[in-house]
Image (cartoon, rainbow, N blue to C red):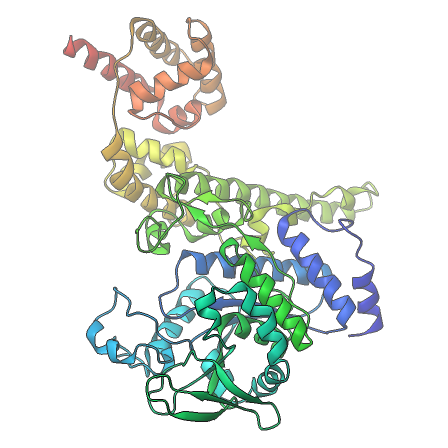
Length: 556
């Protein structure tokens, strides 16, 4: 690293000249770390256990790490790498339920994942199959990363020097680890896990002798009583996962890795082991875990989670990124009801980002003109504080956003009972002249998602209630008022709706809008009503009101 760059990093004061937002706060830690170490390139890492398929947590960790990495590049100007590391040398503890030919894998329990046949029949091993799924998963979201295989790193000797260092520090590593274990585990624990030369099983047995000079360990097979001396090099041994994590940080000089709250104690222990080896643990952030709609921890065995496939059925992938961006250090409920809000947050942030980009371009042109005020270029808002800036890696989105919110589309689908995009597009073209799937590609995506979400979640839960006499009078007033409006602008309509509510003895305007949603739309919440009427149409809304009032009259 040049002295100029080092001085630039060292001069980054806390909070000064750094855009707001948690990715930049994390990036500053990495920048200061490199200023102290003199490294020319930052290494970011994420981990993956390939005994199962990549899931929504995998997406969240890689996305969040990517945002910190991009923020680091933005404030430091230094290059960086992201290593997606697969722990594919771990022993298979149990056969997953969601694979074919499960019985074929039972004889391989305990063996490294990359030595187990692929039950899907597509790759050389079960580990290789899941690694391929991970890469395809990350590629589908456009992440920039380097894939790393634990088996490859061990077998090719990339960890040999670090493994010898573990042997040299064996007693200190044991002293740090044993107090964290239960008594029965202490009796059999070793950070070194030799691969059995006959069975191929990853052995969890105590070491009888450790020889750093020879680079080997001596241990005994508890079943046969046979004694073995095994080299720690070239993949003949691996490390227990907490020691393995620490060794990897040490061997690769990892600068940043985040992890979930459930691993907080493991991070502390691995950090201590890394220091024992002579390394410096990476900077990192502890993110909170997801909860279900009842506030309970999400569990694969309970099946109370939400998969990436589920989310992408009902919303675009950018909205999932928006959900992951929001407050990562707070527990969030992850279930279907959060999807519409995440979509509309993304739509709003993208609209603001595109507006700021256009304003910035205009200011740049003004700043170059002879009549521009001197401070024109300094008046720009910082787009880097917008989550959409991070979601799109500091670039403008490849679409123009959406002139209609997702919530509005859901309500339109609900009213017209839409089962195809064409039904919604008929209303959209009237609201946005010239709009089409070709001119509004992102809106086109939202329309398809809205129909799917309406079909599976909104329609089954619809429940219309009848208005009471006071609400009936207010609805009749609204129908009459809408018929007299001079124009159909959303703001004009919204003001008229407010005025009608104030003319009737509702406890507050919230009660008036609850009446509109429950009586007219059959749901407890809804969109900004003026915008909905502008999209659906005044005549259509008046007819909707009359139909609701007639429904009550027919029932009487």
